[in-house]
Image 1 (cartoon, one colour):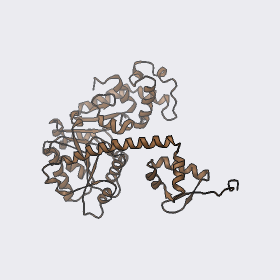
Image 2: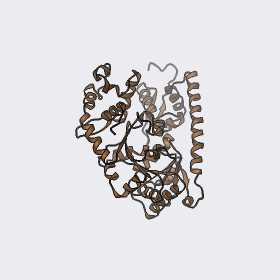
Image 3: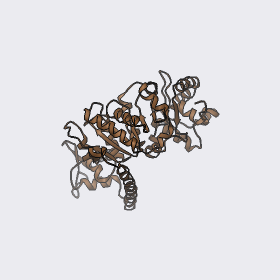
Image 4: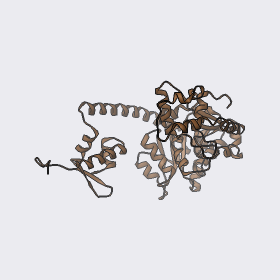
Length: 399
């Protein structure tokens, strides 16, 4: 890591955690700051070449203060010590400024892609065609065996397994791939340094069959927030995804719903007889049922054919959305007016309004709050909360 470019060094200083008390920029904070620099024809490395105070003239933010930025940039010694320690363990760093940074993350997540990735193993594996395999930690032997055999089958068919390394489905699928000498990507929520040195993964890393990555501090402990946050990276590093087993809440459930919402990759869901599982609900939400017979299928190329079809469909949908937007703009129909028109016909909760207008719930809620305050719509205390338009009679405006 001695050859880190100035841009990479600046990104590490701004985004990495080295010692207790550090307050590095979050993904969204870094994105905001990087956009500001770019708009001024600057890049992060300039902060190390010139006087940062001169470059930062005009920057104002209550959370990302000048003092905070300057303090982060002054951690050169701490960075050198940390990088040396990680390098000795075989850990490398990729920043958004590096050509080896996965294009899939940038393309699918945009400015939400992490500024830093820590990893160990062959970076080239990150560019391979892969299937995300996800599932619960506490599952029965049948699902564990299925996950292991599925990982093995994908490896023998020449595809990478992308998973989270957690106990249960994730670990079983990864071990199946590793045992079959396939390529495997483990997206970790914690403990990269510890896992890199473990006997379980060390040989596969050294043989060039496994790459472990994380956007989080390599020496960090488990946290629910990190575990939930890394789900998006599992999906966006793959070409298609399979849910082996999901509860009706928790990381697997939320990650699958997030993927369905954003349509990053096609989602297949293993059919399950477990009444406690959320598999059938995920299928109802748009996941495609996956039969147990996949382990006997001669070819699994159909998993990727769906991916290509969805890609074309998504492109067509984007064109349709653009035409819809242009049409609304042409007739001067604002979001407020669309909501009022809809609510003049029926009572609806926010979720249904968002679905009918094809807008994010956050945007709808903002408009709803404004329209309630202005007296144009009213609340109905059903569950969930519903809204309708207040229809005024002629001559009643001033009453």
